[in-house]
Length: 172
Image (cartoon, rainbow, N blue to C red; front, side):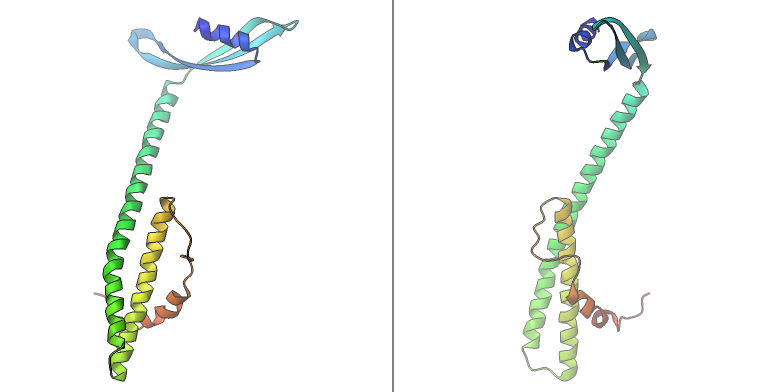
């Protein structure tokens, strides 16, 4: 403590804040914040004026806040990893469905069958757009996003929405 006070005086700043731990009554350790002002007369420091404040609870709250922040960051990272993994896992079979639908559309179909197959392709494209948007969102959160398309506005999605959902079966 004396060494700190000597450094305060040597620096010649008008105000200083020192934080330190000390042993209080009954062996309890407390954190103290010492606010020190230099009193100068004739350009020389003649006195120190100070105020000591027990900041033990503040330090505990800061530790808890830091721990909570670290846990939130870890949870966010796990969520982003999960979203990225799931969107990849969903996208692979979705591309298979779209590929097979395109092959189906290259075969002779009746008008009704073609309409159904085109609806499958349209809804699949819309779903793939959503999956890609989820993947892009997880990349943005992970700070590894490279913009090669606009993930937020999809004209294809807005055009295909009515086709996908107009004849949905009733929900249970």
